[in-house]
Picture 1 (tube, one colour):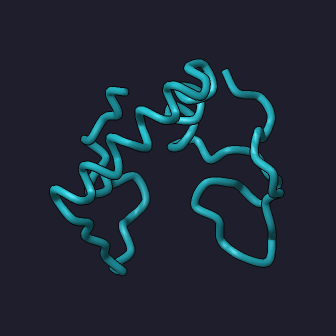
Picture 2: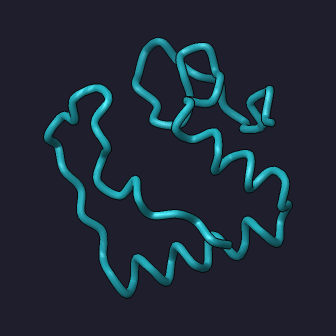
Length: 83
């Protein structure tokens, strides 16, 4: 399990950060991915980046500015990284 922030920037109370909480800890919904990447090392990260790039090129990206109510399953949550 990733206990500390392996990234080079701290969390901030001045802005919203999708990955990090204000205290710099990793948000719960990102922990499984970060743990997977941390365990797998550079090769796993490269494979995931390549796969993500390919999926975006093949399928595009759709975003929404509509707030998702707390506890709801956000669009895309069913996609699993198999790198």
